[in-house]
Structures are given as structure tokens and as C-alpha cells.
Image (cartoon, rainbow, N blue to C red; front, top):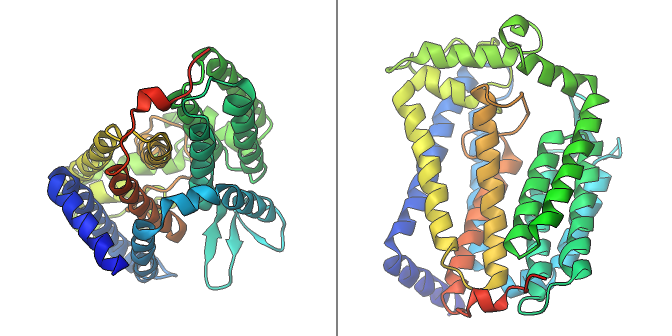
Length: 384
């Protein structure tokens, strides 16, 4: 009976909000496009069958989405402290050599035998949940420096430090950006946020200056053509892939860049492969699908009046959208090279699980918000 009620609630919700159908349509389109591109990559690479592996991850991701649709959000909110503590524990464990799996000098994955799990993906949801719970707990009360700022900043700083130790500077930037955005949405004074942003930028700059690999990436980014055979090789090959595709593309399996010319063609730099093999129209359709997907979700979040649901769903969207923007900016030469997957298109099980789980949680928030409509302006903490 409970399942029938849930299905009935979602049916009525979709019937009353037809534009939300654009979300599953865009997700399906981008997923299929990613599988098609990976099918080509699997033919070209000597080694793992990335298409088969991604299909296995997709078979796990869809049930995760369904579970996220049905989870009682009050239960998640009540246990947010336990969830974030578990995420912090895993973030520490991944730094321990017997547990953490190192790839190219970074320890970001826990080796579970049959697959590697990227801890930062779970940490994204855990941090968003805890910040939303803490910041909304004081809704309607006077703004308090300790509860509304210092404690959230301490939690955010803990994740940032652990990510820097992996090291994963891109994810550190992503976590800080989303955390500061949630603090801003909850009513934190802008002067405090700007001060913290300045401090975070200086800290990241210090770490980058002491890391020859990351510093080299930035210096190469500043002069791509002169370093196209060394530090900017990956970016240069990606740009060649864009140029080779043209309007019609070379056809699936006919691309040249994934034939060991473009490193990480199946993960971080999969978008140039889409443009090379399928042409500019499909690349533009993929960009349009991302824009429509995130715009429709934001329009729905904007209608949420419950502070917890508003902050939780906003944090989820910000993580998904920011990661997408960073990846696209990197492969187009707008940002220095950074190992960050493109949601739904790139190969990667942890990221696929996160995306589908996030979509399920977003729709769960939307459905729950239908029956909870207090005035958001009256519930947010008052600014000093």
C-alpha cells in the first residue's frame, strides 16, 4: 500500500508539473550518448571493456535512483550527523595506503576488490545533507555566528583539508564553492563569505605552488601552443578532436584521438570524442540537454519554500552543475587541466551512482515540498 501511495504521489506530481518530464528525457539522452561513445572507445582501447563496465554501473545506478525516490527525507535529516561522520571516516581511510587505491599519485578511491569507489562522491551528498540540516535548524531564529557560520565552516574545512591531502584540488575547489553558496543562500553576511573566499583562494594557491605537477598544469595552460607536446598535450589533442569532427563527424569508431592520442578519452576528455565522431550538432545537443536539465531543476527548486528541502536540493544541483561546467571548461581550454568526469557521458561508476541518486533525491524533495509550504522568507535566519 505504501508503494502504491508513493507511485500515486509521483504520478499526480508529474501530471501537475509537466515540464519536469524534460529531466528524465535529458538524462536518458545523455546516458545513451555516453554509452554510444564508450562503445566506440571499447573498440579502440586494448584493455577493459568500458561499455560493459558502464552498463553494469548503470544497472546499479537505476535502483539507487529508485531508493532515493522513496527514502523518507526526515530519516536522512535525523541521521545527517551519522552520515557525515561516516563520510569523514572514509575520507580519512582513503589516505591509508592499504585501504586507499592510488592512481597517478592521488589516493581518491577505496579498493573494494571488484570495483573502486571514489569517496568524494559520497562526501558530496553527506556534506550537502549536513549543511542543509544545520543551516535550516535555526530557520526563523536570529542569525548566530557560531551556529550559522563557524560550525558549518569547520565542517567544510575538514573536508577541504582531507581532499587536499589526497591530493584533489579540483574537488576541493568544488566543495568550497558549493559550501559557500549554501551559506550565502541561508543568509550568511556577504562580508564573512568574501573573507573566507579570500582565505581559501590563498590556501589553494599555497598548495598549488608547492606541488610541481599542479603548478606545471597552470603554467602550461597559460601557453598551450608552446607546451602542446609536454604539459598541454592532453588539452591540445582534445582541441584537435573538436576541430576534426566538423558538422558531420567522422562516425562512431572512426575517431583518431582515442587511438592513444588523447589520454583519458573515455573519462575526463570524452566530450571532444563526441564532437569528433558525431559532429558539432550532437555536441551542441549534449550542451543543450545539460542546460535544459539544470534549468528545469532550478526552476522547481526556486518554488520550494521549506528551508531544509530548499538548501538540500540547491546543494545537490550546485554540485552536479558545477562539475559539468568545470569539465566542459577544461576540455575547451578555458580552465587548466583537471581530472573531473563529465556527468552521464564519462566512464565512471562512482560518479554515475552519485548522479542517479542525486536525481532521485531531487524528485523526492520536490514531491515532499508539495505538502510543506511555509513562507521561506519568514523561516530563514535574520541577518544581523
